[in-house]
Length: 282
Image 1 (cartoon, helix red, strand yellow):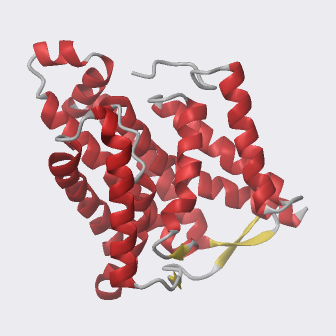
Image 2 (cartoon, rainbow, N blue to C red; image 1 turned 60 degrees about the horizontal axis):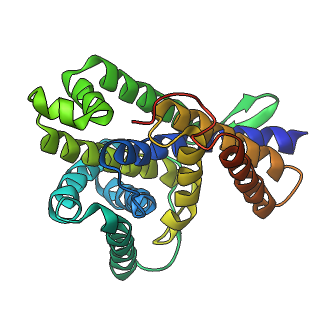
Image 3 (tube, helix red, strand yellow; image 1 turned 180 degrees about the vertical axis):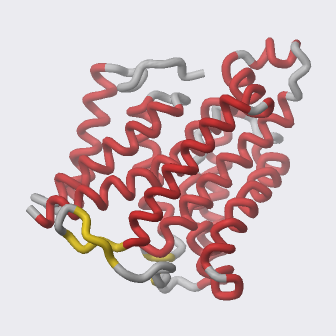
């Protein structure tokens, strides 16, 4: 029972981090119609950058700097790589970008997996278990970032522009909204969310050039189950999948837990092809 509780809590914590990363993937698809195969590697870059930067500035300052660097990186990639590429070729383009990032990190950071020390030591009693304080802080911070992102979309002018372009690009253009600038900012935000997720997750996962390969399927499953472009559904699906895998892992191995998630996605696609959660996808 203690193992089941611990794995379920771990699933919830990891689910909030995955939800933050999947939000970036979902908003990029919803606005730009880009299936970003490199999104998992943006997460990986975030884990590496926070480990490197924290050595000089400390973890908490690095946690602020990494998503800002991710936003700037996203702007550059959108302008130089994504925008000039035909929509039909973006999967191949982002796959190539994924390989470039992986090999660049392996060449500069090394192939050996590393562990980052917990920025907050100690444990706290949760349901009768001693649980790492940082994991709870990571979950709370990820949840706060998700809430702040939705507030940004609903309460700011730029957020309104993003929602308008997602809903009807032609009408948004006719109304004078700078669509090209909104698309660039959106790609930057999506990239920044991925790097932020990596920065939060670095102390509780391994840091290596292949980390993004593991996180990308979970993000895609969350986006598909939640509904393509449905941001709220993506968050709910990420939490559902993480808790499901955590619960299954208490009675089976992690491979079986991932199979359970894939089975759920298959059932959802058969029963509700547009996603488990109702709502517009554009």
